[in-house]
Length: 177
Image (tube, rainbow, N blue to C red):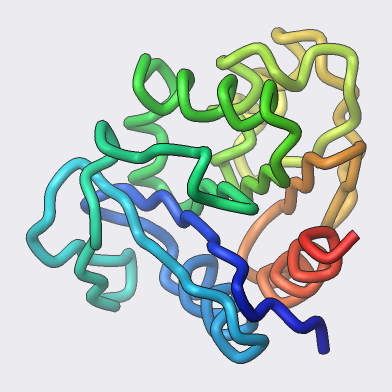
């Protein structure tokens, strides 16, 4: 297991309908390795996952300063589509990319990174249960891999809840490299 003591991870969730496993499994991996995990959303009231998990955000999305974090993770679930066109989410992704941070996105959340423009010409995966999400990648000139987890440089994408554990482990390893 990676040693993430003194490392900070920002996990961005939709306030409603984030995917429970895609938050909880990677978060457990990061915290188990000693990382400090901060959850950001559009409200500080408890957020609700698709299957009823509750998570109380620590900070508002608009207050996220990527310079404080070693990795920035966009959690999937049907609710994460609210960030597909969100300028604040796009700014966070762009700033994290410019600062050479580890960036992760799982399920449909890679669509946020694609729409922010940071996946252009790169390899990525996304949940393929609805072709509209694959088309978001292709429409942004992203090389869709169809893999469970795809790593391209410091950007790690995953295709859904079944990949949540591998996604978390791959991000933990990347933080230390």
